[in-house]
Length: 180
Image 1 (cartoon, rainbow, N blue to C red):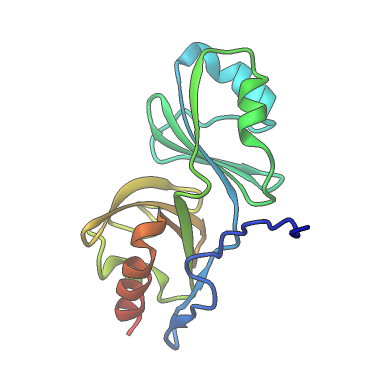
Image 2 (cartoon, rainbow, N blue to C red; image 1 turned 30 degrees about the horizontal axis):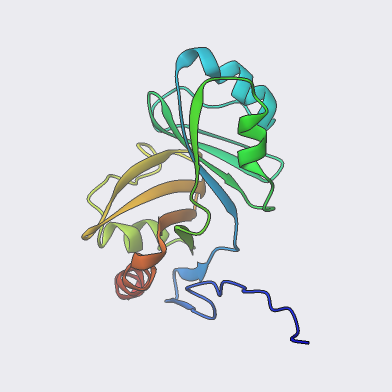
């Protein structure tokens, strides 16, 4: 009898490290992610079910208990559960009309940390990332050279750069060059 086999997805950036004396680049740990679209009437129900209040202001985010909700548009959020929780179940349990798509295997993230993180990202991103314009907790969809990314400022010197898996090597290489 053949042994049962289980396919396990290898993280696309597994083992990658980069940076310079002022910035460290590391792959983020695997996480659950959901692309969420919902009208204003669904926000309260979804927030309750998810255990995190969905932000409603541009460039804002909310983080609690390993979950992050990033505002991407008037009716759009990127939800991240760093502990791998079942975001799809929580959305479905909200009893609201919404659209939720699991993008856990589509996306990956790179963490840029250190005093040179802002300059490293700005090597390929035209957005003003100065602390006064893009404060801690700020989030936005933008570009990094030729690819779409979602930036999230975790703290004064740390950014989470979310991108599609298929662009991860490109994004990591560009950030590594920007670090130097």
